[in-house]
View 1: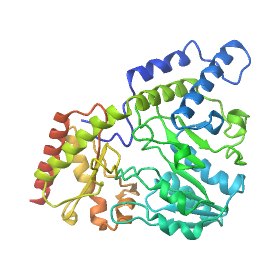
View 2 (view 1 turned 90 degrees about the horizontal axis):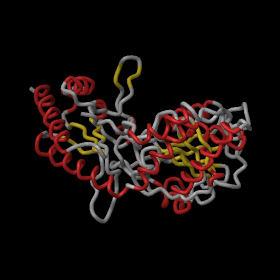
View 3 (view 1 turned 45 degrees about the vertical axis):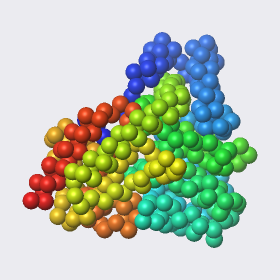
View 4 (view 1 turned 90 degrees about the vertical axis):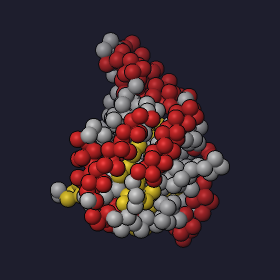
Length: 380
């Protein structure tokens, strides 16, 4: 029973089928001038155009990368180092490490780094960005958090920093909720395939037209001289197929996932006492979190072992996550929950359920029952 779809998803059959021709007969290099290469180039550019349409962007504003981590690193490091567009970084305290770690590395190189706090519900306190409204600032705030699912107020943030460059990591949100470049007024955005039942190793970076953006890595002239390296037609074909499925069925998939997470919340609240829901609760008029995530912690977490909970769940055939990073053999508290003012013990023993379109009610019931029995045994 797989409940870690925020980490990665199972590839869909039709996505794999779309990839296979480009791994076998149509294996050409898209930069080659002969027919098998030109065929690959046509597919790559058609995919770029379709993906750009999905996010209301121009095809020339989209470059393919190896995934979310590369896109995030490229946006931050190119803006600071290669393109010399900014000298100040403002990132939220709940960013994925693919943003936090390059930001910290740039700070070690002398760039000014400031951390934007969140409230106790995990929402960025966007008004505190106002002092950094400058053309020399890059603000990076994720569209939705990967641990709690909280959707961040990007439109309100843009109103506060109209002059700054604005980047968002939309890896978790793309394909699950609306994501429109023009409405959000973004300068840079990161998307990826493997969170929406596509292949690993492929993503894209949106770069608004008119920005003098220079390559983060050098080599060939691929991707309009903005990302050197031979494109993978197979991965790109899988990416666009997965995105087409996700965007075309977004409402239906969201409804299914929301039904599962509502059931999760209800059963967890009934079967396990002393829990704290870290994922905001959606209602009919206000969508505050992604439809697929439920993150909980335990108010008596100092009595519980987070790593042991995950291992015990795994032994019962249930895959879940706690969002913590294992560093030097010790489980560290979730930096997201710590930023939300949760005690460190809660951050170490949190459990994140993330469902998919394929998750069933029976799986939800079995997973909650397993967790309830494990936690009860630990408490005894």
